[in-house]
Image 1 (cartoon, one colour):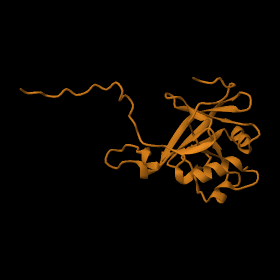
Image 2 (cartoon, one colour):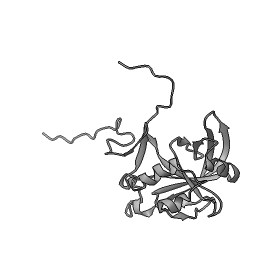
Image 3 (cartoon, helix red, strand yellow):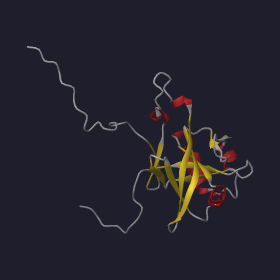
Image 4 (cartoon, one colour):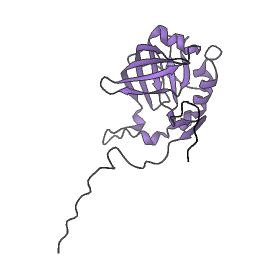
Length: 194
């Protein structure tokens, strides 16, 4: 039997990402976002939802750019810390020992230690209530070569030890239980000779 709860945001697990922003080293900032996701494949688009009182909100609103950096178990402490500390008070890259590198297309930096960094340009800001949604075009994706199979060219992100956020806690992603389309894949017929 299910219990009825008040309306809330119970879609879990979510990605826990580090969003980087700023045009110059002096204003580079990082903050943690769990309200993020893909909204369109063609053209590639994603979103982040940010509270207007967050330090990074005004930076992104002014510059129109940010980077979504995927996180790993190795980045879990930094992911949490950057979500509870303000860039008004700390240089988060320095405090967490992370390296800010130049992106290819946007001025916002990428987190060198992230396996994937998604460069975004804001298309629209949608006020929603507690958060505003930054709807963005994906203008470039940087992938750490460590996770690209040199023989097949396939991205093997499962080797990165990715993390997710669920109802106030961080979790390592576990074992694969299937792949896209596995539930409808036709079984090969056995050649039976008599």
